[in-house]
Image (cartoon, rainbow over all chains, first blue to last red; front, side, top):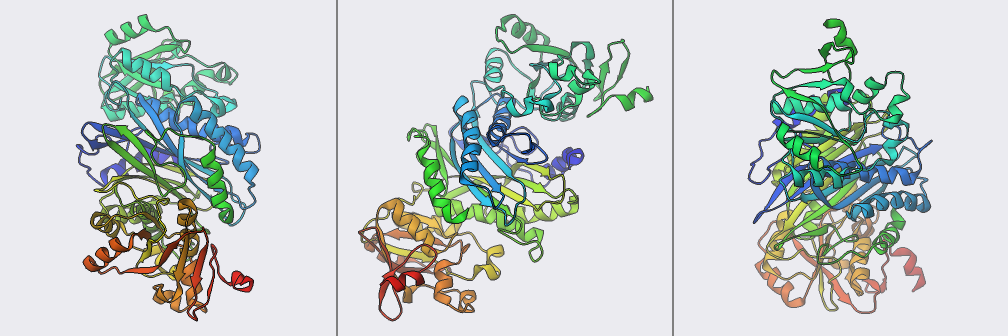
Length: 309
Length: 309
């Protein structure tokens, strides 16, 4: 379904107009926001992870799976610079799954929950009739931090495009052990005004395209500036891995050049932040290749488009 | 996993002591409650429904499946007399699932969402690598109505035990088309003080046992008083069906005899409410059989225990 995901999300969003006073943020962002009156609001995200698709139990431990499921949702909270407050976890288990195995899965969930002070407050344990694979669904609540939740649709022409950490190659190991950028997101949002943010779950090229299309802008990425992870450097084409690999779970954000200067000057965190490009007008994503050529950048790739130019 | 469910839930609950000021209701009730400050709070429930376990796509339509998934969560909101406010839905789909099929599933979700003013605000669409069966996970938020959320652990000795509607035989059809008792629950809770409530998802005998064990009380059920559904009357043993069949999604609640008299006098709703027994001390569930004998009632059955008496 993945290539059609944005199309389907767009269709879903069009099905119902929700009153923005009660539902300030609905389908299409990292989390939905629901107003509860008297200034209080809560945000919610849900993520379903499947054995064979998002993890592989032939190589991953149940503890890693539980950790990843929670960490992916924590990353959604980070994506809007919100504070995680509680999670519920529903699991579909093979009929022969043991209580001991369930406890290992739970240990992984709790290890992430404890790290980010986001307790497991409920859940649902169900079993397949046979030995169909595990599905684990985490739904997480957060609340706004000191700044309003940062959306995807606020990028402005002239903005600096930034990422945290380094990109690509997470499939090798990091997708099971990554650190969601909850603290970094709250730290950044408390120091400067962000115009748009999300977490990178489908690769920089795909996720930047989401910010651009939801904000009605374009982008020019500088290939030489992209922080390529050590894992991606092992790839035959490290730049392509950094642009297109999924599940980096780093932050992708845009802010004005002045705010960027301020942030960069103040930044004292071990997790690096890197300027990788600029928001442009015209709704087109482009990339300046290391050899200086500027070519179109599309979700999931740049190579086809090189032929066109 | 089902027979061990309460044991596992008990184990999960013991893993972490949560501060009740922030988490007034956590694992073990129909929904968890999270306080957001300034008197605001939100409740959350999550439910995973599986093809082959909770529905069967050889006989059910995708629209029915979508409806059931939402209605089961709405029933959790009803179970505590809370007001549904928003839902997110995550689905795991077979690789060959079509967009048209997804729209049918969505139509079912929305038909329940619209009926109870509980919009779909987000979700996640994932696909198996192969043609593993559908899993659908609904997480729903609610807020307290005019009364505090009604818990499972408040039943008191002397309370009247009541149910809405009629019980048993829902597997024949009703489990796909039932009406969650959201309106009835709010109506009841606005008129009288309830001591304990939940929805019947695993059968009266199992769910009443949950109220008894969480409240530290016993119960004496009057078999002759149990409202047996027309579907259950087709069963070889209608009483057993009414006691043990799952997925009635009716309300089970306890209240003082005075409150019951008041409620019964005022009740003008087409959905019947019926007194089926009394809360007793001693922590033992019993049933007065139609022939007058009093025998032990255990979760999922009474017949084994007849032999013991």
